[in-house]
Length: 150
Image 1 (cartoon, rainbow, N blue to C red):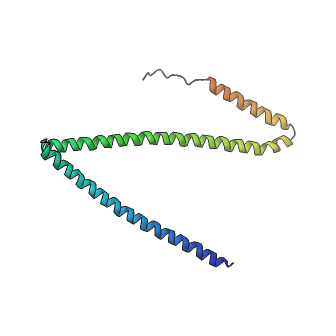
Image 2: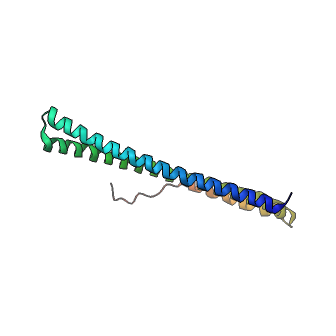
Image 3: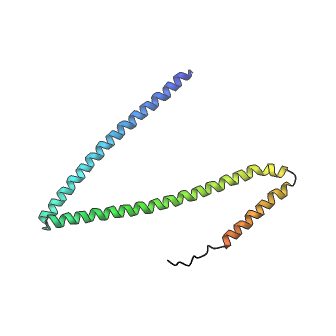
């Protein structure tokens, strides 16, 4: 099969996918704009209903709507902050796990060359014992309290 035919087929498919994605984005943007307009008019209708029928008056109704939406904004910001902190913690843990896996892989890859040298067993055992001792030391030492008190 001709290579140029395959390339044109693939690039044509990519262009079609890009055009579909662009059309979908425009359609979703228009639908979202219509939904926002509908929500705004729904809020205006709710404001008019509460102001007139429940006899709170326009000022108290406006203050109630403002308080509701400000409280909603605060709740959303707190939720986002909690999620971002958890996401950062998970990313940090994943990086640490990936680093450990990479170091383990490098150690396993270097092990045959270390064992083939003269004094190979000592070249492997001494660093392993040192790493083990350091891990025990870190686990058993606690950070010192700076005495500031929270």
